[in-house]
Length: 224
Image (cartoon, rainbow, N blue to C red; front, top):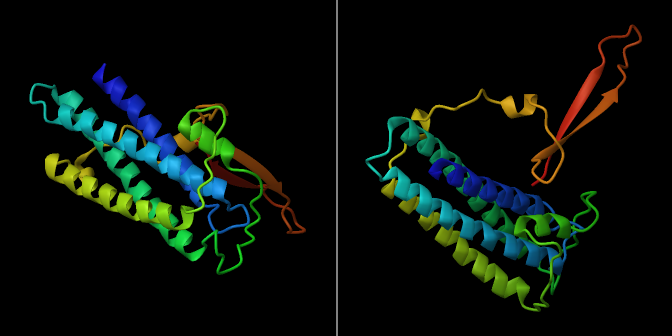
């Protein structure tokens, strides 16, 4: 029961951090807006709540001396995955802070970048928050207040990661993977609410007049 609960909690964290990364990509582009900033704010707070829950659960299990060797190995593997997810979250939060400072919305100091991205990001944010529709709050001070909060939260995440390393001694290089690298890319991926990506295959005819093998360009589009 403990292992399944941990996997479920970690899966939820991974999906929210993936959604956050997807939203950060739109910062500073022509898709940027106050709604996007609000979506980023809510998504990162949700990720931090899930991170605290994962840390509390895994820490208590790994400190339990009565668990079997097999269970400990599995919890250590989940701990490494959790730590990796936290590393990504911290990187994206720092990136969000830097871009947010460079592209303020209230008093623009530079033109938004035409990245080719169009459309709303509300669907991605709604999935991260597990809601049908996002409700936005008009915040005229989002350029300063939110960035100040974000900077403080980055410090909290960094501190939490340092405390994690002190409380639980798990060497990442000593944890064995349960599958080969890239195995998830070789498996059949179903597109649905639980899918983590879509594989788009585009065919490109060879330019060589003598012919040749058909080239397949496989593009992995990360979703949550």
